[in-house]
Length: 106
Image 1 (cartoon, rainbow, N blue to C red):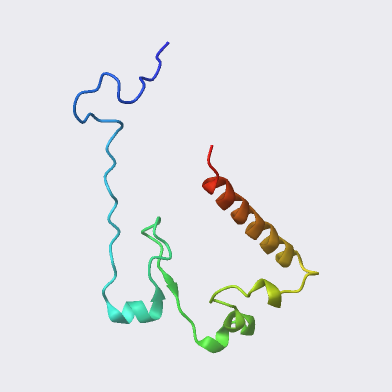
Image 2 (image 1 turned 90 degrees about the vertical axis):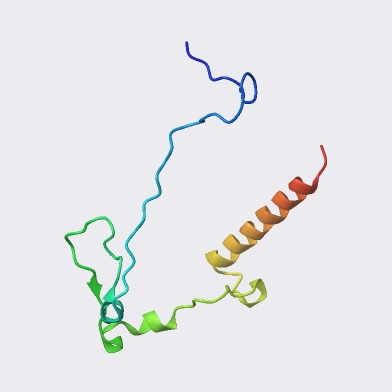
């Protein structure tokens, strides 16, 4: 059987821990006309497919322009009868519990 060696024992200097991974550099679009007319990089895997063309604002549904993109609403402004409210309460409770466990001494 081949067991892993514990770190720090029997190592001199800096040795390789694993294979080196070369960073993948993605090309950046610099043509201003193409940046205005297309969603550049919408097909990063397949090079033979063309990027998605942007349409006029009137061709998109109305609900798209009403989406919240800022910070989430405070808990006091949410309706307690919704599932989203209780998910937020649960998440906040888990964060507080994790923080108290992190600060607790052994």
